[in-house]
Image 1 (tube, rainbow, N blue to C red):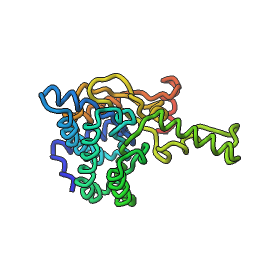
Image 2 (cartoon, one colour):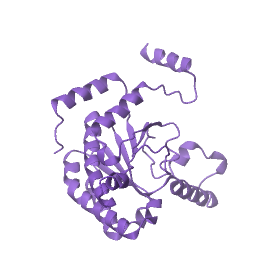
Image 3 (cartoon, helix red, strand yellow):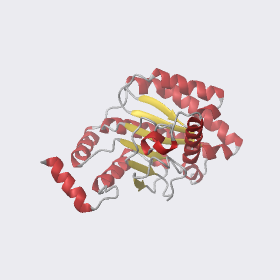
Image 4 (cartoon, helix red, strand yellow):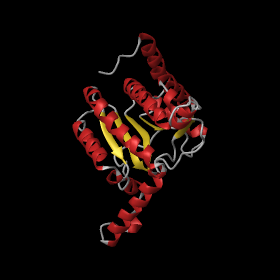
Length: 264
């Protein structure tokens, strides 16, 4: 079972819940593992291993807060260009983590999903991933989405290819194409867009992550490296999110009037 939150942490969670809306979908670019390890004179893989503890804590905290979707940028298509030894070790670590954590995720009603070019993963990794997804498919709690062999441009290119194929075969009229239809061709179909995008390590870029989906996401940059990122920093990001006015192209007066109408 997930370790129960401490009384102090429960109190903090209740304050956050009472302060405003909890994002239903949070996406995180988990960055800084290598620099965290380098700063300690350790090999890069030590940073990746340490980052697993952060994943565990953020998943637990998100579930406790009532977050419905949590998408983690786990391995990008560009990451295949890293040294083969590091890639191989990362794949082995992924298999180990999935095997070690699956039962706890399942016991706590977490539903595991994945986005990305899954066929590009090594056979052993793909098998344990699909088995894990199958095992948790009927769970109704937090949906944990792992972005593996994923990039936004890859996803959009793949969607365009499928749209062109359907148009060529008379299954789609180009004049009728809408944003909602495009959503159905993305690997995130059926999943709401992230309301909050968090990036760790202080880097100010989105790194080819969910390019279509984050069009109106609020972005929070943390200077903390991922292995040190724990729930207190997640709470900080959510508090910051709650202070923002999300206008979606409108002006403040319109948002205030709509809010007043909803209350009445």
